Length: 218
Figure 1 (spheres, rainbow, N blue to C red):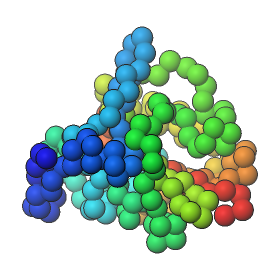
Figure 2 (figure 1 turned 90 degrees about the vertical axis):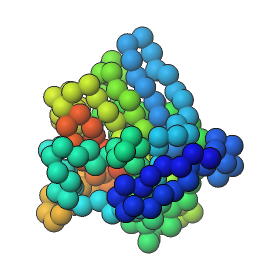
Figure 3 (figure 1 turned 30 degrees about the vertical axis):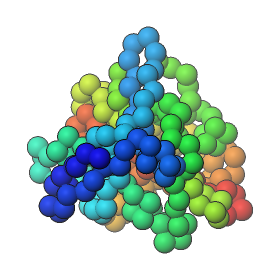
Figure 4 (figure 1 turned 60 degrees about the horizontal axis):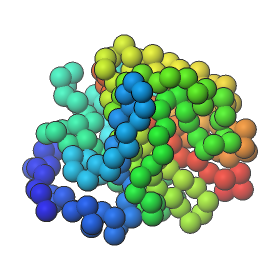
């Protein structure tokens, strides 16, 4: 197994092999969208879940995470893309998130948000810009799902445009922005009667979207 240096707390962690990841059932994937199609590959190296709490939100798509300097990418440290571990996903103490059994996520470029029938207007079928997307998904035995998508675009302007489209899609879906506090988020009841909570963060050409969706009865 390869060793990856954990730069945030000076702890060396060991990356599991591909077989070990499959055995754990974790969904940590990378998707590259380019002109002419989408290549889906499992990111068995260079993507890890991380255990450092995020500082500050970016609900309006502006620069985020005040703890990071303007030149530090909060989503990729030492060549490693950081995805939130289950215990650091929103409302973890309530839902007790677990890893999904499947390893490869479907392609979900922005502004797609929510489950298939939750916000159908967000899936416009347009040609998405070139991007590399990393993602992880979790579920709860109590009828909830959570996922994070970290997407790298060619430029900050493209990322800002995609965040703007996502905000429009959230509004169309019936969500409202809660901008108070250190971690702003969007929340509301979707067209499928589920409850959806969405957090958006952007750093230059990178965008992180974290979703928690709960069944209507949850």
